[in-house]
Length: 225
Image (tube, rainbow, N blue to C red; front, side, top):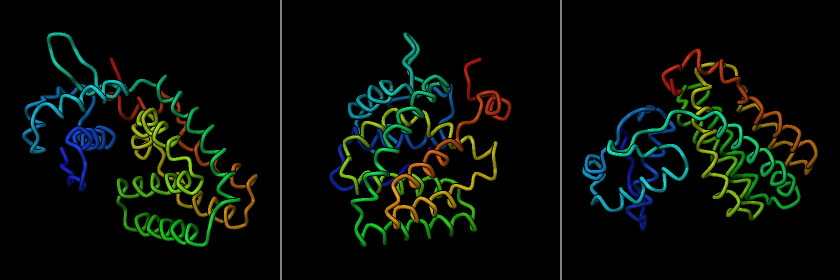
């Protein structure tokens, strides 16, 4: 498990939740892996109480499951939840990017340009985890500009299922052209063309709509037998 640094002021529960979510999404903790509160608490330098609380929150999202008399384990991928997450994200982000076109400032555009430049760097110097993190940051920035961070927080909970498949999809479809999509979205935002921005964003999100069978073929161990 990759142990990330604890952020200043971050509660033990939030820290444990963030680290475990990261490790599940990026496959350090694979589906079916049994989870020990004590071991994770020791690794993070926490007591068992905040780790137990993080387990409860993760179970609510559906990425870990509690097995009676056995303990907790990383959940296998539920494609119904992936489809639902995709539906929520598509509806929210199209509305947000349209708002952004009329609200963005020069400082906002500068941040988005810097993000895209970093994406181009990690595309040429392959680091798919860093690339996906920058992808998330790009979309999060759109919600910040639109003043819809509560909506982003709500979306983030269910979209963990989308994120798990998105990470797997890198191994199935190599030419996703994600960075190019972000450049085009940024150009539409710069031009304040809300319709064009929404169309490109829709196409962008659809790049990750892979058939379940395609994912299963490459990663059969990530699904319930």
